[in-house]
Length: 200
Image (cartoon, rainbow, N blue to C red; front, side, top):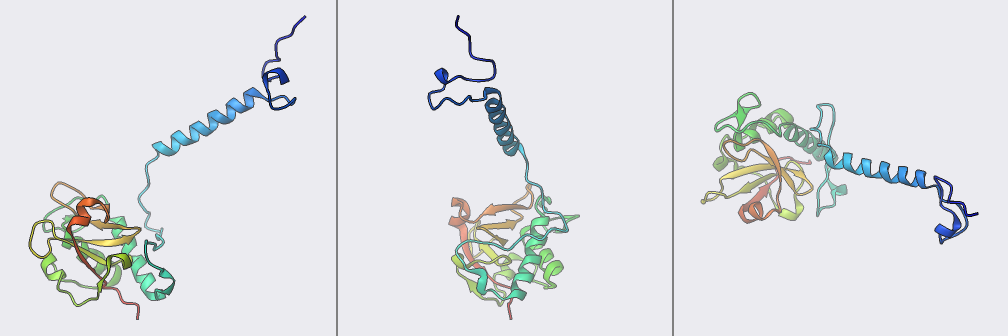
């Protein structure tokens, strides 16, 4: 008389790698749980930084171990303030979270409130500030990045926040957002970067 394999197990005849019994139910359960975790990870939405959280200053193409501690602290304050404003509506001439921001208004607000630095109001004036010009592969969080999207010398500005990303207020109808500086559009229109924050 032939007996079928016991429910929930596979006998040696059905399992070519050895005589041990393999629990089918537990394997199915593991696969189901792993699949559920993957699905939940894909469906989750990143949360905006809370006021109490300080993002770590990181970036690509530079060894930050030699950066002075006080520069790291100042950069962290700027980075934290800038990322916290992502999602704020764009408004031409705006310079507060309540009114919205244009690109230079965002720069002014962030540096005044995080570093106590009062800057010129317009992008044209900001390109002429007395600050060191920084090579693109040496960017550090808090550096200003300039772009020419409309012709002329410079027409747009943002704040570098690390890992090849910058925060800016891009255009009418949009919101303050974070973009990658190496995307074709921004790479094409990149002009230069300046470092306002000092480590001395």
